[in-house]
Length: 242
Ligand SMILES: [Fe+2]
Ligand SMILES: [Fe+2]
View (spheres, rainbow, N blue to C red):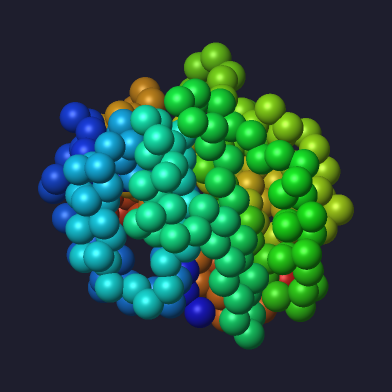
C-alpha cells in the first residue's frame, strides 16, 4: 500500500510557485498512491475564491482516497465553515486491512495557535485502536518543537496531553505540517513526521519544497522524502511493525 503526505500547499498565496505545484500533481499521479494525506494550509486567508483554487488543485491529483484536514490559514475569516462545506469533515477517518488513519482539526479560527481539545482524545483512542494495523494520526500543528524554525510558536496548547494520548495508544505515525520544514522526531514507538511545504517558496533558511511517500509492504514501512525542486529522493525512515 502506498500513501503520499503533502502539506502547506497554500495555493492562493503570493508564495505559491505554480511550477512546483504542477510538478507535485504530476509526481503524485505517477506514484499512483492509494491514499493522499493533506495536512492543512491549503489556502492563505480562508476566502471563498481561494477554496475554489484549492479544490481545483486537489481535483487534479488522481487519488481515490484523500484525507484532508484544515490548517490555521484555512480557518481564517470563517474559512473553517467553507472547509466543512467543501471537504465535509474536519475530522476524517479512513481504514482498510492494514492502516487506520484519523485526521484532527487542530486549528483555531483567526489565530495561528494549535489546539486539539480534551473532547477529542477519546476519538484518537477509539479510532486508532487496532494494534495489528499501522495507525496514523494527522493534524496540522507540530506536537514537538521543530529545530531551525525560530522562536517556538503555535504548538498546540495541549501538546503535552496529546503526546500522552499518542504514547498510551501507541500511535505509529503522527503526520503534521505548519512549520514549512521537514523533520522527524521519534518518541518511544511513535514517529512524528513534519512535512515541509510542497509548493511554496515560504521556506525556512535553506529548506526546500518537498513531500513524503509512505510505502507499507509486508509489515515494513518505508518513508521517502521527495524534493520538489530537484526531484531528488531520500529515504528518511524505515521500520517494521511489531
Ligand atoms: Fe503553512
Ligand atoms: Fe500553518
